[in-house]
Each structure stands twice: as structure tokens, then as C-alpha cells.
Amino acid sequence: MANQAIALQSRAPQSNFLGGAVQQNAQLINMMSQQRAAARQAAVAQQEMELARAAEGRAVTAEERAARKAQQEYTVGRVAYFRDQLPSVKDDVSWNNWLGRVGQEDPEYADELRRASGGRYDADFVNRVSMDAKTYIDKTIATP
Image (cartoon, rainbow, N blue to C red):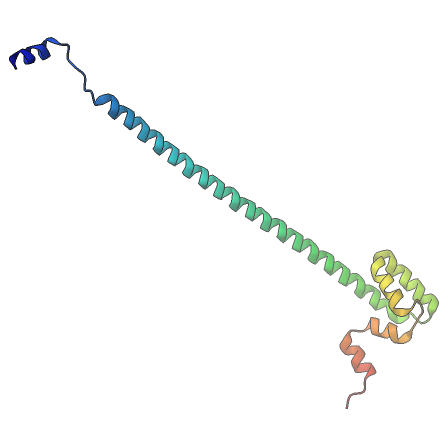
């Protein structure tokens, strides 16, 4: 036993044999925590991108709704404008002139009116087109 103690003393001092393994494990743990942090950051960035994309989609949808609303308001205004001119329509010539003006603004509406009227002036049809439903019913149907 004494010989062994002397042999151990005569050798060069030994470094901690667990030091390398501990250092390697510490590096592995650090690398794993960095990977987890990077994965969390990537998930947060992905979520932020999805939120931004959804917000952009909502903004585009709102703009499209506003554009459709403006177009509908314009169309309703134009129809009202032409409807206000209908009382001056009294014969086939004025009917066709009126349809020509309507066709310049809205060809589909003019074609629909031509088909519905048969292409000829009809006072009853003009009254139906020029009045709203309640007014037309009140003027044409006797009430008890």
C-alpha cells in the first residue's frame, strides 16, 4: 500500500477526469437550450406573420366592401336619376331616347328594360318602373 501511495505521488498531478465529461454535457445543454429558444422565436415570428397576413386580408376585404358599396350607391343614384326623367317619356320616340341615355350609363339595365317592355313604350310599364312598389300599388289597386 505504501508503494502505491508513493507511485501516485511520483506521477504528475492528474486533472479531474470528470471535467471533460461535465464540460461536454454543459455544452450540450447550452446547445439544446439555444435550439429551444430559436424554435420559440421562430414560432413567435410565424405567429406574427400569420396575424399580419390576417390583418392585411381584413383590410383588403374592408376596401373591397367599401368599393362595392360605393359602386352600388353610384348605381342606385344613376337609376334614381333616370327614374326621375321617366315622367317626361310619353311615346316610343322618347322611350327609345331615354333607353339610349340609360344604355350609355348602364347597358345591362337598358337591355333588361328593353326586354321587359318588348322594346316599345308602354305607359303601365313606365309607371311600374318609375314608382316604388308601394306607390305603384297605392295608385293602381283599389283599397277597400
